[in-house]
Amino acid sequence: MVILSLLAGLIFGFGLIVSGMANPANVLAFLRGTDLSLAWVMAGAIGTSFFAFRWAKKHRNTLLPTATRIDRPLIIGAAMFGAGWGLAGLCPGPALVGLGMGVPKAVLFVAAMLAGMGLFELRRKYAARFTSNKTDT
Image 1 (tube, one colour):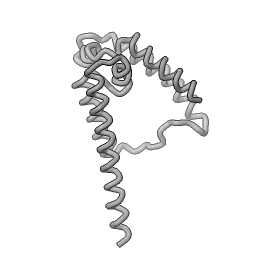
Image 2 (cartoon, rainbow, N blue to C red; image 1 turned 180 degrees about the vertical axis):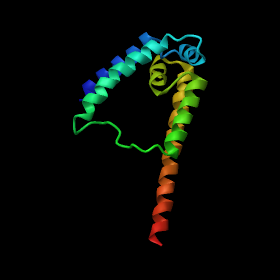
Image 3 (cartoon, rainbow, N blue to C red; image 1 turned 60 degrees about the vertical axis):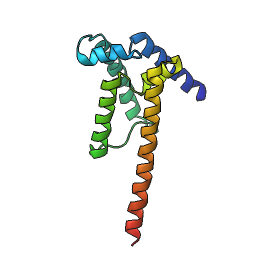
């Protein structure tokens, strides 16, 4: 299973490089509407994932998300993701590819992403502790 995961990650990373999505300048040009070539990449990804998700829904043990509610944390997280993508021209996949290639901007992005994930976990644990203490009284 580890070998398959490694192979899938390598193929994904190679696809990001070949498509130009690992280059922040290309992504920012796409987001500004000055270069729409990445739209074809996204269309291909949506087309591929459409069939993969349909297949996965028919099977009991999948890694598909089970949450169906659109709540405040989802909206805030999506807005933060979009803002980060728009400001840096990177999202987690291309940032990890850039990290592997030694791109300084990617190093900073991944460090900030990990810090944000850590802060989220601390906040979640604190909120859970506070909520559990309130129900005990």
